[in-house]
Length: 435
Image 1: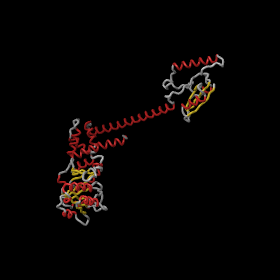
Image 2: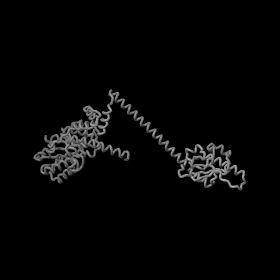
Image 3: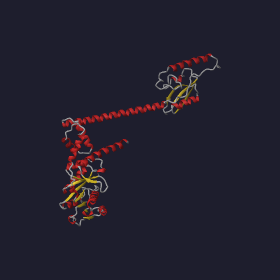
Image 4: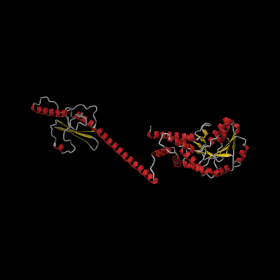
């Protein structure tokens, strides 16, 4: 009996080497994976049924020889089939006949070695798939344990809240609170809403909550707001000059350019009044610049017979020292000047409250909510105007002149808040999950 060893990167190539070198009479005595990752096959030619002593001492060798016939599925190779046993018996009988007849007699080989089937699965591939399945199962178990820990933490926090409040959480109220929180509303406004509305668990509960929220928003949108002297104030970049251009353009389209004048007090920035002068040239209206050498009341007296005087003030940081001079100028202005604070909906709630606190010393008449189209949530701005009681006069939602500004309506603001929240929730989900 001749014994040879074959090495290859995988089982398929190793078996092919055995076939090419030994032929179809080969019998696989053992196979193992070496530390290098290769597959080693020990094959025998003219196998006589007994193993050499060197092979019997090898612990990694298989106790029984293995045929090259690998077309039997892996689930069935553990138990020899009846056909397989019959072939073994027939091979033994052929061996006995071969020993009984002369050497010139022809006999069949001990084992046939058929071609590998097309669905043959490489044991190395099976091992890799098994390892991958084990890794996936481990990851799933880790995720389950993590979710259980998060659930326990949430249940503990909920039990602590219930224990501190001494009352059970109403699931209907909890669901309504969650939806209101997604709008960006503050806890104060949400608690006030839930205290005023008796939720019944019906489909119209949400509409009732939104309608009641609209009643909270102070608005001032009468036609008289479009006439007289109106000063627009606020920090830098909130849209004061653009809002003035929109309102002036709307008034010119209705009443002509002879009844409108634009006034600017912004002399702190280089060429700050050029944008307002550009609006004046386009609309063919007068533009006045109030510097430190002139008086605002003198300019207002000059245009007292104009139906609409729009005043653009310098945009400054609430902590800027020059802001005090601007506020002092507006305090000394004529009593009929309406002072509107421009609040961008893109700012944080605390920033908006700080701006209102700084400018409230000049007795504001209302506000303009700007940049609705750029905001991801309108709840912060709505909460601030409700808590501060500052009436909303205009809402501005774009750069188009004169289209993107309109008098404030409470129900319209709430509708925009709901639409914005739903739109950005969908957009965030698409970006997060790649859909």
